[in-house]
Image 1: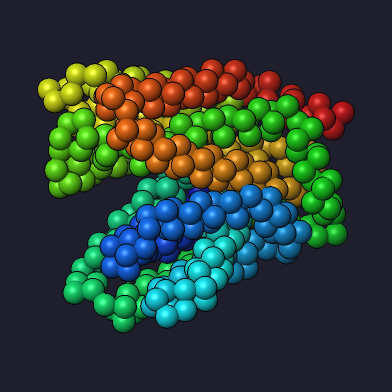
Image 2 (image 1 turned 90 degrees about the vertical axis):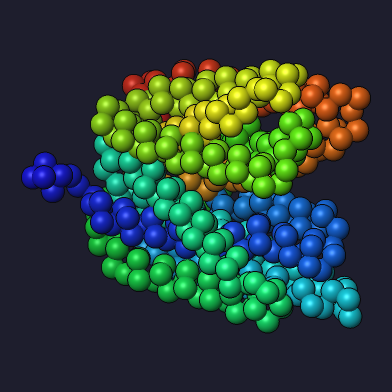
Length: 443
């Protein structure tokens, strides 16, 4: 216990408080990407392409993450960016809710309000999420970063689960008035929790990691400085490849179970629960193992990242085999293994992201942690948008192909290859080499 108290930066209570913020962000995002998606299509009869396009728009807006990260670097604190981002996120979600009943009487006005709402949702997620990760990177000691990533992401999943369960219970029977009350209640509760969780939190950040406005550079200079670093460029490509593979399966697994294995909606939904249970277990294992045996530098997490990528690739290869065999393949175990490997990969990659952001700022003597997290967050956002689109196209191909199994085999094989490419990149990230590359730019 005495050893823990000597560790500089945020303690476990502060990390848990930031996890509550992540849970708040996840709770509001659930409203936009899950609940409103269903309500638009089922209750309001919109084409499925409408919510899909709006979700893609919210990812596209997150290309501006470096801008918000740079803004938090130039300020005296990151907390206002976090609170402001959550407020904008909640406001955007409520705009989308209020636009729904306008659809029949004023379709153009409804479309305009929906577009504005999802633009604000993307902006709020980007501003709050980027600043939160930058604060974690600056305030968490290197040996705790892997565990900190696990704690915050597990709490985010919990926030999504709790808000989804609460909304589902309170929306029965459905009405627009109930939707306004439930959505507004979740958004307001998330904002209040964010304010309480971040109150005086930045006092635990080491002084050297606090943004210094008088030494801040322009956004263009900051971006050029980061991309001049070999490690930063390679990690950006890694984030894009791995997150593209990670997100492609989101819209594929349940249709795959229904089309190829003839499962009912209830049965395929239970598979989703198996997958997410595996993800949580993988996050816990990587968080504990990464902090106990590594976690002091981004390169030291490369083994965990590579293991997660290779495990994901093998699980996807198993699904490709199962697509050819059909019923009789141990689908639940296969999807559980995929979830576990995904969880290991996700936490290790986030821990490495935090380590590289902190190490890069320290090596260059610049307060640019937010810009670095913004660049990688933008790469992740683009990958998630493209991955979801690729998944939807893949499902359409499966429905029109001569053999559903062969179509899904192709999709899973592409995902597996992307994960293997990411694993190769992760294996080449050496802790000593990355640190040297970061410092060579300043020489």
